[in-house]
Image (cartoon, rainbow, N blue to C red):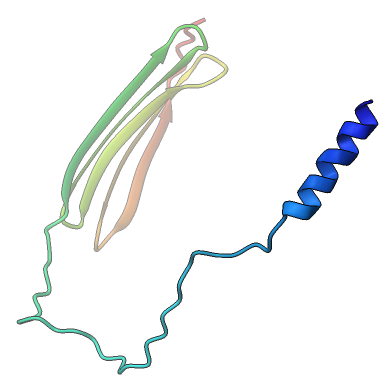
Length: 114
């Protein structure tokens, strides 16, 4: 019985089937490729300045870290700290500018928290 129903469904699908078609329309434009200018061109320059900070303290996973960074023009200053797997705390202070590049000072505390 099931095979008869399957054959009937396949036969109806074959008889009623149509070719696939697409509803997309493609328009070809062979015009001139010139940039469109409206008025005067303004080259905007915004002085880069930001201040960013975050902190994570998760006692369940033991993930403790923080970071702070600020920028004013080419001068970038910041620090981050994190708890190492051995229990010590790693601190990194850094600053950078156009002349000296990135300068960082790294140190680890020997205080064990566990």
